[in-house]
Image (cartoon, rainbow, N blue to C red; front, side, top):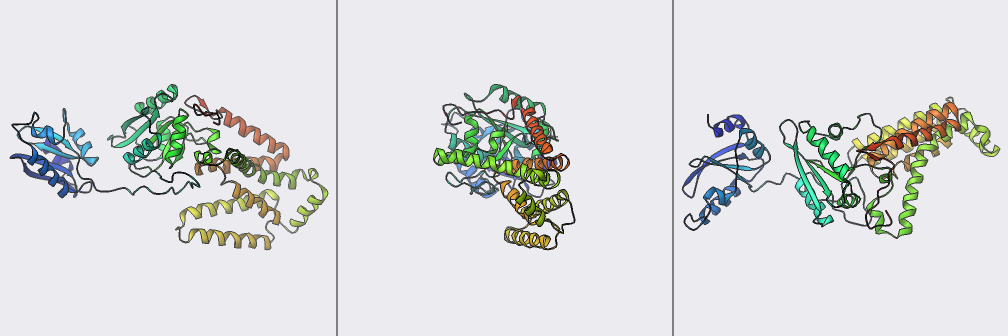
Length: 442
């Protein structure tokens, strides 16, 4: 059985797969492709136009060499791979040659839009999309350097999923780059459909509570990371760039900060640090001062807290966990609800629910204030993926504070700091500070 017959037999069951026999400059050819990937009529018109311009006696090339790229050593898998990537494959019957031709593609991705998950106050608002080629172009526009390098890998059992490694040749950390490339090449056959599978490919523990790579939809953040010597990964059909390694400082600094005066840049970053500390410490501090160490408060504050908790039937730990659970549910609901009604329902639900639990004497008034400040401060950290770690750490502090008071709170902070200090990505410590070359501000 001929190779072309094997391909047609393998893909012929697909309703959008086509095979057309046509004449190009008096040569009989067979076109293979998917209608869902390309405009067949426009592609065939362009092929006929190219063939009409071909003059055999005056050209040093043959017809198939002037139309597209000849496939060297064609195999069934290699041609199927091209077809599944949206290419048009042309088989010249007389020459027994397969040619890879780039057709008029259908637009299967959305156009470049403003970012959805990262707000930009002053700066470029172009965000990544699902098309990996468009994303590479956006990065090249921002970096505009001949040192920018890209390496593409086909991963998965059938090698159809694409991962692109991007770095700056003169600034990348060699050990980091070599480790990332080695991990990808050694696990090239792994299926990568989501970030958990990508973490497994890169050898990260699936039980880690801190993300090992930052995700961003802003090209300017990628440019900043490349200047620091980091490595960027682009995953096919994933509208975010993944930056390796993820560091503690990435929670507090974004490139957009540099579009304001320097003093405001540092004040904003200090505010984010304060927000993280507030989110982690305040719930545990409330429980420890109410239940274990009330003697640490001034008598006026202690009496105010006691009056606010009058008739509350639950201990402070139970009421705090109860409201924190409700707030987590509101967070999740705000993500799942349609955009047209989500903000309204979560805002009204939060107000009504808060007033109801206070009126029912299930929680104290002071706790509502504490958890409102906690909820707001959890959103000051850079990157929604980083907020998950912060929200998790506050429960550790809360439980230790309920059992051991202020000593437990301090012990919890020490444990979190020790845990973060023990983390590393490809040999780079999580608490490491990477500075941009030629930039004293870091």
